[in-house]
Amino acid sequence: MIQLVDLWKTYRLRGRETHVARGLNATFETGRSVALLGRNGAGKSSLLRMIAGTMDPDHGDILTTGTVSWPVGFAGSFHPDLTGAQNTTFIARVYGADTAELRAFVAEFAELGQHFHQPVRSYSSGMKSRLAFGVSMGIKFDTYLVDEVTAVGDVRFRRKSEELFGERMENSSAIVVTHSLPLVERICDQVAILEDGQLTIFNDVAEGLEHHRKNLS
Image (cartoon, rainbow, N blue to C red; front, top):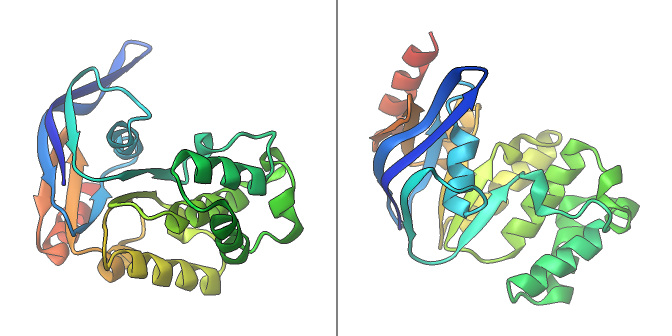
């Protein structure tokens, strides 16, 4: 379970303020796959990073039970001068995973070929995302944070990613940022809409998507 308690986060740029969280109180329940939706610039990725602990709120607390992944797709997860294999080894050691097992899993899943043994700085954004998704899904977390990464690759690779995600959700929770509403219908059982620093949570996915469509229009 993840609880947001009186959470505040505001960006100020050239005299303009963007509110990611304004006294935000919300609970993400254990065992749910939640789609985090909102307009562009609403702060969805920033909220994920605060939950992961890679960004600090201005004020408030984030209470978690169990282990939480880093935001999958977040480029900062990797050292650019290390290879994909070396980054995978480093992360395995940090999280206490079996190094050889994780490297073998990621090498097969991400389908990077010889690039797996080349520096990450030489990767395309798609290759980084495939590496990030593979490394994250290769480690068991109680809650996975996913930022648009299942959209990477061709139809076959996206299908493979969704199947792996579904397997992990049998025993874990997830918060998923995506612009793909059909994806939400396939993999999520709850919708949370971030708007002007507040979250509205819908247990009915269809109702949440309809609300989101009205916001966009």
